[in-house]
Amino acid sequence: MRKAFPIAVAFLVMIGLAVLSVRLGAVPVSFGDLWAILLQEESKFTFIVTEVRLPRIIVGILAGFGLAVGGVIVQSLVRNPLASPDVIGITKGAGFTAAAVLFLFPEAPGYMLPAAAFVGAIAAFVVLLLLGRRLSLSPASLALVGIAVGAVFQAGTQYLIVRHPTDINMALLWLSGSLWSRGWDDVLSLLPWIAVLAPVAWLQFPKLNVFQLGDESGASLGLNLTRQRFWLLLLAVALAGISVSAVGAIGFIGLIAPHIARGIVGSRNQWLIPLAALIGADLMLLGDCLGRIVVVPREVPVGIMTAVIGAPYFIYLLRRERRRP
Image 1: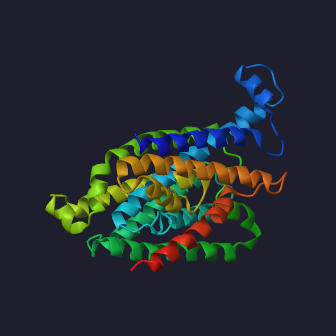
Image 2: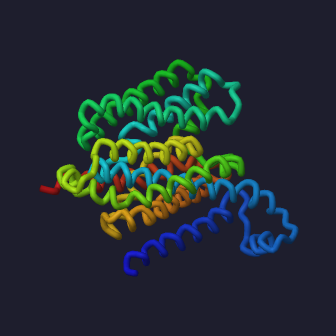
Image 3: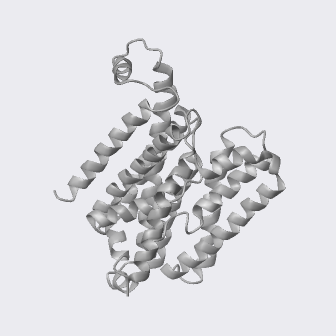
């Protein structure tokens, strides 16, 4: 019961931020207008609420779930609280292929961008697997090889930006991560994946708990370390890849949401996964709300706001890790 309380609080915070996100923006919506829309009464704000703000809120929540749960899996496998899907190169791979579509095929249909991002995430995973398999997919090799893979994809993205400076605006918007213009089509493309993969991830909590004990303990308990690490890492890649494909290359969610949750409920993944998912959604909604009120009527991409929130926390984590013996 004590562990369930912070999960309930995080859920209520998510609901409160969702309501706040509906109301905030260049055109503020009052509680009275919201109530009228809920009662299906005619209102001049109906289109803004139901077709503009509500789908972007749902996309933000779902993407927050995916990025945070993917981060929990990666941190459990690598046994490092500073690991996340963007640290091991998954987000960078998705960003590179998305940038390639934006720069090289500017007339491509809209569905090509998320498809390319997902393909890029899988490509980064394949490269990580090929390079790390020779090292038995050990935690140290996953982290180090992942950083190298991410650096290569990041370099490719920078090269595309330098070669196509006139087409840089849309690419930078996507690479920074944004919920702008997300609609019900994005919700429908993201919802089935998260609805299936997130529960599957939660069901893997016994294996993730064993991995946190170390490879020797896992092997003594009869766990096939290489095979299970492969499938769990593939699950993390799928969650992060589909999330990045929907909202762009948003960083820090997969890093700080699991770490905050671990500080509250500990390292047992049966509690850690749901709390981290809700905190990830809370951070996405908070970043989106702040981004819409900082420079009204313009919007600051949610990825920039989550970086502003996450970077100081990341520095705090680094300082704390350095102080440990």
